[in-house]
Image 1: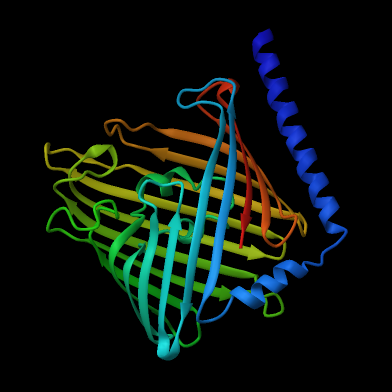
Image 2: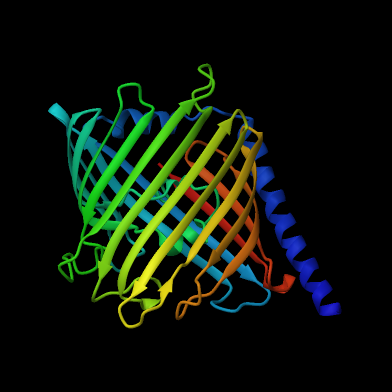
Length: 350
């Protein structure tokens, strides 16, 4: 009983100290909102034909009781990218992450015939899931939801067609990909991954461009005979997903659901892993945002996979246009409070 009380007290004081530090940084920075260095950087290195970007993240991870891993620190991302678009709609993106053994993240070239039709080739994010398509520097919490991390098709090598209607409301993306990521830089069987996304965006207030409702549906179909899906299962998988995000002034509400039909080659059983999240956030000040999330995923008893359900509380501090501090407190609903996790992310994104 005493040990449990001490654990709660330690977690409380750790979280409170970090919040206090973040708040102090935000207050100190709010006194001077001018950012001449950032403005000069944009003028020099943010051109239509050539732009430079970078993302540096350091993450602290603490749990009093752990079922996996260790307490400590890690470099979440050390990314560098160049991108741009030249005359007549020809463009490119090259992005690397120095923390990964396969350092290349994106290597894509595209041709924009018009706003309604674009062809893209190379390695890049397959068009599935609003949260996954959101850049690492802009996601709400330190990590993406469990369902997206476990089920979304991720980055792939292939070709994609995309575009939007003339009024900018409907956006579509469809693609064919190898389906085995980028590791060996070629397909490892003769089957392809097919992915599609249809998204609708509705402005709710013309005076505030950020006030918007975004609704998307996603689908993918793939056969794997060599590398496996989640749990190492080989066979056929169909994924369906839907997501929504509503932003109104300082408040946003978001949710996503992904369901899988996975038919294994080695047995007649069909697995149906699925998951979802429900998220809310509110800017209490222009530089401080509070968040809450319910995160759920079930593996349907796939080998080597676990079911998870947790409640997340978060605070995001934005001292400047390029900096952010994120604090997440993760409470597992099916384990004791000792297994709660504290994540802290400090990042610079340009």
